[in-house]
Image (cartoon, rainbow, N blue to C red):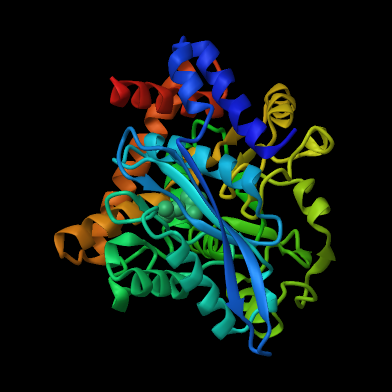
Length: 400
Ligand code: GLU
């Protein structure tokens, strides 16, 4: 099944419990607009390469389209459609007045120089003229894009509110860099007792050591949760006694990989997913927990910091095993929530303090977690269906 089909499946499963009208579902099954562009880039060696770029605007009933832009070799229209669809549900779950979209470029950014990346990013922005804009559609960082890329987009477009996740000096918000991980921690902390994660089970395995996974690992360490394994695209490291996260972050910075960390055993990404632990945190890419490996997952809780890490078939297997999955549209919605705060500050010409941003983020994340939990109880279902039902209710009422 394609990722976009997975996303649709999640919507239909929730809708069938909550009695959402077919007209609404038909509209939500198809993005409102799909844009594909080609971006010619002059490479450092003087040759021209043409890259393929995308923007999919899934839905704007609740506000301007909102969603990141991803640079990865696997980016294609199907993936961007799925990611855009999830953004519509995520902004609705978080309760912020934005819609859902996503963008991407099919590229391995690690093969490009900084100058080539800048020309590619500015090229994407020019190609999206009339498609993106502060009151139309507002991009942000996603896999392999950072505040640096967002600053290029804002500069090329000529208005800070066209994009979020910018460096502070370019109109960025305090707290945006840590927002995805921090929001995930607030959601986890709110639901912790109800998920039956007693202190004994406070052992964490994290797949992915990019923006979300790395910062989440640091937060766990600060809150005395034991991180026993982490991985990146090259593989993982494991120490049942717990990893020293600060030392591991330094190790990653100097060697560009988490592998061969002193005192830890090298493991594969597949092994990490199947470790005995309290909380498994997929924080990389989609489709990593599937019907093939779900039965072997030993974690008690899966906290999805990645988008779409669990397939619908795997969801069913985990549910039967009693593994609670805190879904992406709730668990990683802290990123887009602070993105909305950034956009709001830019539109009003304000700059909020780190404390203000954090307090507002905490309030929204706790509220969203409560609302999702209430629907899980009301419909005797899992948290993913609970979250999708909440989003469908809010989307339907916006449409009316
Ligand atoms: N790319 C992030 C996500 O998947 C953030 C999107 C945003 O801030 O607009 O939620």
